[in-house]
Image (cartoon, rainbow, N blue to C red; front, side, top):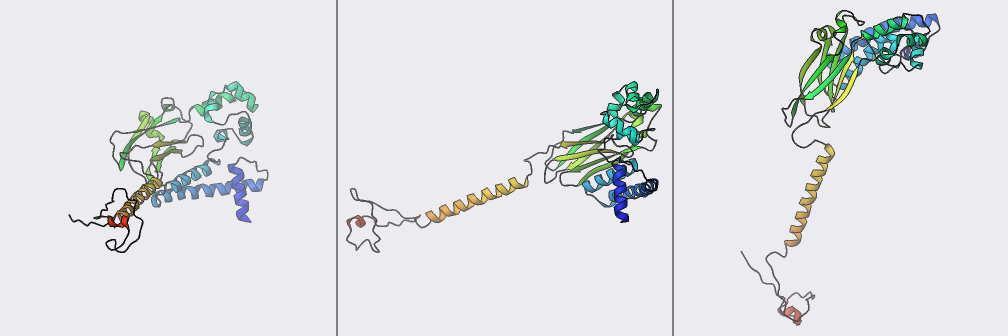
Length: 314
């Protein structure tokens, strides 16, 4: 019973469903305090022990969800801003403001009309969003081609690093995690990058060696924020290798075709084997001999007279 209650409270909090009862609100706060510590420990443990890409990625996303109290694909991104609760967040979602970019592009006066607030509330909301970090992810392959290993260059760009020099909405401890996995669900690369590192030059670059996977050449590249929903970047990248692409079904088909060819050759040899080294002659004007005589030298058929096997050796 307690488990079902805890699960329902977690779902309600992450789904931005209001909880009216005061006692349940306190229980929810306690659950998320403990859950935030547990999921953070889980992500650190999985990063050390587990090399499966999907497990590590999901543990990082779950830890961030418990910290933000939102699902990773939630439309209520505005709930993470100061002075914005569930009621105001619902109003912004109903107005179509479901991302930080849309909120920043909206006029301050319009925000105040949507939220039914007085100036300068809209301007303050816009400034809060403006000073959030804005990331950009670039991936390119280095021209050193091989049939087993490829080299890619991953660059993370902080597009508004000049604005963030004096004022920042995110905390000083905010960071993003770069995690790369291949089609075989194997972890290729993982690294934490602090905002303070990106603020020095505005970008961060790393060369990564990628071993060829068995299923396909596609990579899943993810940039996960530690504190905010709506800042993550997820994209696919296809790596080029020398030689033919590796697909299991094509390898099976190739082996099957080779087997069929070998069987056909064997059948041709078996058919041609008994007749090898023999020849027949036919008397002009006679029809084809169809008699099954055991000894064509002593039989009385005219057509058999000339159909005598002549052996030869090499």
